[in-house]
Length: 140
Image (cartoon, rainbow, N blue to C red; front, side):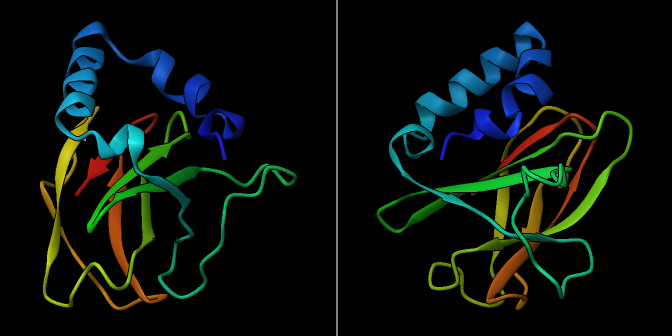
């Protein structure tokens, strides 16, 4: 699946400042899994119990989340497409790759975001993201 189909480019990437684009480009060079890893759209949940995928037909797509997995390494990317509101959302991650009592660290964020997030047992395994409006976050 191509994330641009879901409005990612228009919703966030085209709004990045040149310095943010340089940082993103640097992250892509440092973590080649962002380009060459297997692509997995991730389910999300506002309440931590009911998870679903973005729905292009109904327009429900405040947050688009996906993983790129290369070998035994997962990189989680998420974009908040809302122009005004923060997104507080659980995102499913690969259950086998993330033991309980571990965390994922922020590799890139277009706005202030938590530096580290704990893995939780929800829908298999998940993390709870806080994403500013029109922001992109990348965790590993």
